[in-house]
Image (cartoon, rainbow, N blue to C red; front, side, top):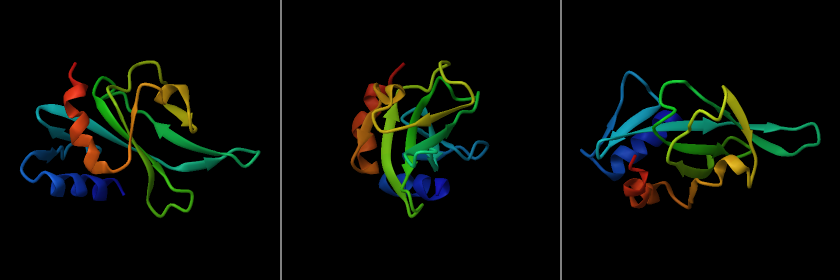
Length: 123
């Protein structure tokens, strides 16, 4: 899924997006490094959906695209753009709809909308 999303981004802006080969979860666009997080769905004991966001130490201060998976794992349910992951999160977080950690993130209807928000990701 991760590779497919980055390939989709590259196809939208050929020659402008560069996948970072050392880290298969990131790419560069307009001099900005952006991390891609795929969040699989998890069920609580009461049957509610949550999405597991696993955080890596490297890249915490870069912009991020957070992708929550559909419950049947057939694709991405939602795309969010966040200015940076930050240090407030430990190794993982269980996200839910309306989660406070996503309050400063922008929800995208389509992945192609990412480029409209790139300028807002300046340090």
